[in-house]
Image (cartoon, rainbow, N blue to C red; front, top):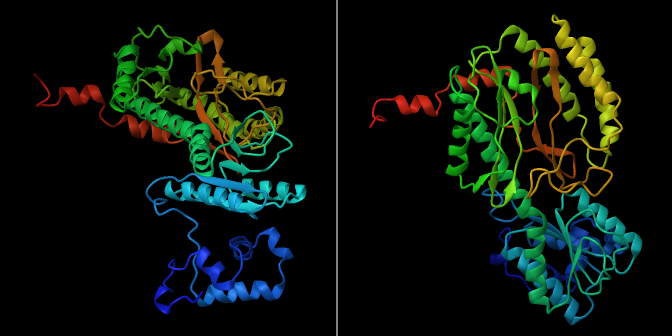
Length: 445
């Protein structure tokens, strides 16, 4: 095939054009240009010819969808045995076409019935951040770690959806179902968490001594409804003063006193999925020196736990690593109040004595959803951590809570944008809340 000079603009020459020009298969050309393990079996002179033609024809692979800058794309790995017949070729073509139409980034690999190559490709796809897998005529020996849809030739495995239809319907259903399995659910919970954080921040802005706990609940519910939530995910847990000792206090009728800390734990039900975030803030907008000491040591120990979370590691091992970091925090922290030091010691020792293999509770369609099915934390899993530190004889406590999404490289804190540092909390609370805005001229009826 001769390619005209006018067609040699970047992106004008496709992989199919290049393969036809070289009289080679697309798989061979793609393997060489992407430095695939399969390329090792291709003769050097053929590799050189492919690279030279790609340079000459100004070939540019379009790896990312044009919408990538506008919104997040979904990344899919397609694993097939080989493309040797019309049916197999049309099936792969149908899948790639369906993915392209949805502006998804995808990687297609051929394992040629080689178990070692199949495992190698699976590991490569996972290391490159693939979020779901479509297999074609491929037999897996164990359930995959990612959402998987199998098209034809697959025996039954837990967690794998099997489809056996014509190639176009199979491709459309596989891609659609894969999105439903993982990407869509995470996207909804991400939005539920964003709405949760905005609601908590609105309550922070509005908080003043003399208000009632349920007035702060109303601030959050205004935000929840404003952004399309169906209602509450659970009873509002808004505690001030001595009510903070209770981890799940929901009477919400006490008055905020000057000098109180407020513990705010409330989230919406958004499209049948939930979030769960907790923050602490002073009722009057300023931490007292004692509150600063109490909150700061708690926050540093909490962050020691957060920074120890790693993907594909058992929570029990994470807790042990976190305790070592907590010991360093305790050794370097300057305590002035014996009760706060005792509370911090109890906090650390509780983790040191822990035999649990859990960091917190999962979230999903329920705020305490089904327990994680694996002994280690795997990509795509969602859960919260919410350890409490208390001074029982004063009937006070503090507790933060964040939503953790495990990823291929570690984790993402979906609620990280909600302030936890003292300076950030106090800065936010200077801003006008809903109550102040209602009092402004022009807002009175």
